[in-house]
Length: 260
Image: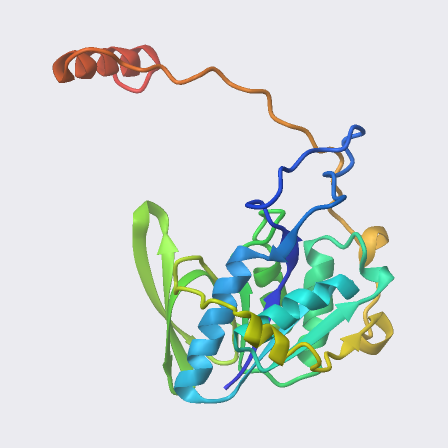
């Protein structure tokens, strides 16, 4: 099975204190530590496990700049077979639709049975996977937390409202957005990183992909402001015995309209 995993280089929130520029146009990016998007890490692990079970190859692809090559090498050190970098100044400022358009062009240059994305990336919209599937006219499932290969179909489990699980059957080729918790991504050691350090990673620009109308000029969704939400009031701690706490909670719920 030929699998393509779409990954992204994002600020590592565990290693950075994120602050906003004074003019509200962006976050402060100087000296930030970057890593692979958490959801994408689970998608890569799932692709590797599928390949190990049924055969084939895993290719990781990212839209970014030359510095994004580091996350491709990390995913290759993790076990992916190939990496593809989609880099061009014309891509800067692309919205979700623009990113999906660039990725769709890359998909069309290959022949893939399965395309995986993370459930969402650093902007939290979770839109790229669905847009990519629509552009490729392929079946799509989001928030996938279970994948089983069944011939030319997949059985996929989805996380839905109320903590419930939904099982579906989906034809290949298809696009899946992977939820965290579907697996346990493997540790990437220094030996693996050194092994792929000199592997050539092809780079495709806008001309090679045949894409236009992307980037800041083509974006139909634009960020107009970054701001820190005002701090709310602190939590109210209920004191007393268990019975007294229950009585107070009931009164609070009634006062707030939660109970009648």
